[in-house]
Amino acid sequence: MTRSLIFQGSHTDGPMIGGRSIDLVKWAGLLLSEKEQDKLWGKTDPVQLIASLPSADIEREEFDSDWPGQSDVFFSVFASEGEEVLRQELTAAILEILA
Image (cartoon, rainbow, N blue to C red; front, side, top):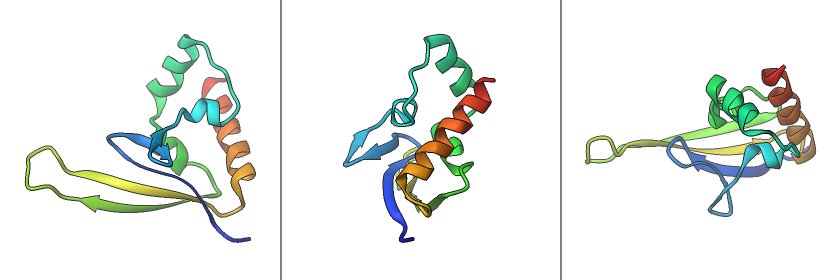
């Protein structure tokens, strides 16, 4: 199967599709309470969560700025098994963290 680009982003801005920020929980097809959101993001962050998925291939590019504190890491996320498999893995990972 061909790798599919799913999202891009940075550690500063988080994951994006077409330059727009996305909510990974909604993308996974879940609706969480504020308490569940707090629990999820208290245990992980979007980049770590994506990196934990078996079919997520992440390509990273470091950007160093001449300005202190302005460096960032940009990433592209590809789905090696297709978008639907990645979505299912994300859903399962979120539910496991909340269990």
